[in-house]
Image (tube, rainbow, N blue to C red; front, side, top):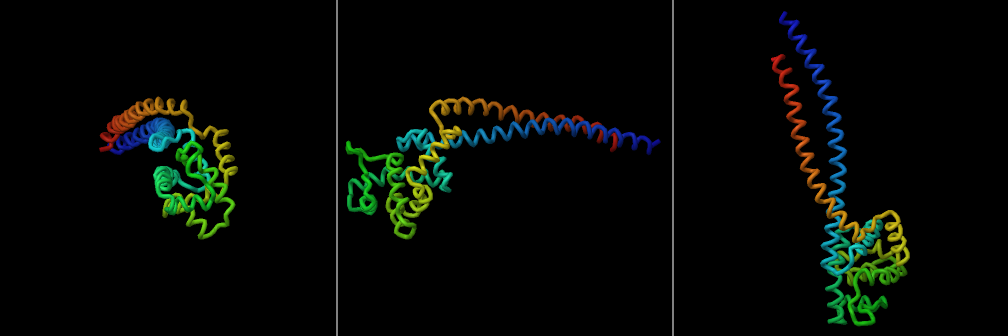
Length: 231
């Protein structure tokens, strides 16, 4: 009888585990799918937040920055490297105007690129980039090109921008056009939608945590009676 009871309990445990496993697999698959989608969305939100901060710091529109981000990354230049260049670019140009004999000013003169527009305003990175790209694209690769890039954009970081600069104006514009075609350039409307989605995803993340807790409780409730019988 004892053996029979143990055998019956084992069979019940086996059946219960199979049923619970199927139930949990379905719930877990849904959880993973939704959680993956939220993770991707949160990464998009973080990227958008970084663009907003960079736009506020530089005065360059989010749309322009997002287009440059795509072009840079397609050229092997990371967004963090691009951000480092853009955030220091304005100060470097201002210093070059104040001190026209410094290395940045001399490098730009050597390339025939003006720091200021016709009204005397210092040109932004987005405005000056196409012209600089054409100049760099026409230069032969080598140490002199690397030195020029470092003199203009900063020692230790300027040369990292060369893969983007070597594309020239047309190459960069083609990348941006492709990015727009596939909806990779962020508009002001998209920024507003992202902000609303950030709130919704926060609520959903909390809901998923509640589901995970319920899964744990369900597993415990289903398995405990079976374990008690075996023991």
